[in-house]
Amino acid sequence: MIEMDDVLRATADAVSEFGDTVLAMEVQTKPLEHDFTAVDKLMNHVSIALVSDSVALQLAVCAPGDSCEALSRALLGMEEGEDIESEDVADGIGELANIIAGGLKSRLDDAYPALKLGLPVWNNQVPEPCQKSTDVGCVPASIGDHPVTLTVMREARSS
Image (cartoon, rainbow, N blue to C red; front, side, top):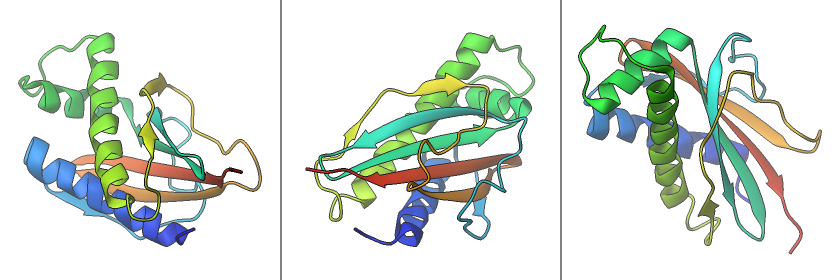
C-alpha cells in the first residue's frame, strides 16, 4: 500500500488540474494534514467512494456554503452573484467532486488498479472516519478565492 502522503499529493494534483483546466482558476494548496483539523465544523461536503478489492477510499470535498455556491456557478457557466438553487449547488459540487475523484483515480492507477468510482453524495455535516484504523488526511486549498478542504479516508480491504 502506498503512503498516505502520496495519496494526498495525488489529491492535491487532481484539484489543481481541475481548477486549471475546468474553471481556469488558480488553485493553491497548503501543507497536508493527517487529521480533520483543517475542516471547519460548519462546512458542507460532497463525498465519493473509490473502491477496489484491496482498498476503499472516500474523497470528501468540504467548503463553506458561499464557496459551494460560487464554485457551482463557475462550473455551470453562471454569472458571479446570479441566483442559484440549492439543488444546482448540490449538483455542481457533486460534479466537482466527481471530476476531482476521476483525476485521483487516474493518478492512483498504478498503486490501486481497478478502483471504481461511486456516486457523489451531498451532506451538510463534517465527514468522520468510520473506524479508528482508517487512514485520514486533508488537503486544505483554495480554488480562486474560494476555500475548500479535500479529505481522504483510506482503509485496506481483505481480498
